[in-house]
Image (tube, helix red, strand yellow):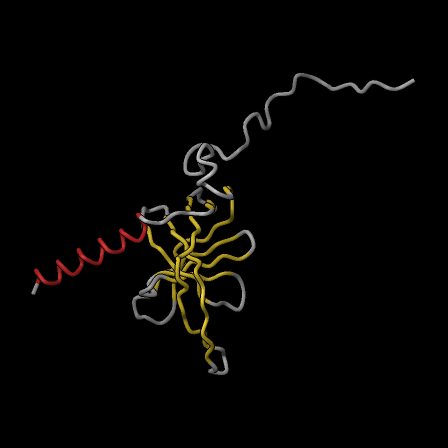
Length: 168
């Protein structure tokens, strides 16, 4: 029984890893929290749209189709791929097993993990946008994973006051 559980766990880890290896991002963003911890998010899309069901507060259900997905890397090294779901505010992504959710609104993000009792989610990370790359496939020279996101020569020391010539 232990061998079967171990093999099932290993297979699940390998399949989840394959989803992140084949991910081709169209853009990337990095978020920071008040403790200077970073979350890296790559955005991409599937070839085929996925369907999920959104349930309104009155109980009505509506199908939602999207090709969008994200790959999230947390400060502790946890990585997951989540797929877009319908949300009344902001943009919501959830993993297939609904273990993690990634929510983005304006310049902030929240990463939450399903509670032990299965009744809702607990916030694992909350941060604000600090760096963005529009298309990392074309901008490989500009990496947001390491180093400063400040543009080259930005904020360098001044060479002295500037004078403006007046026309006569």
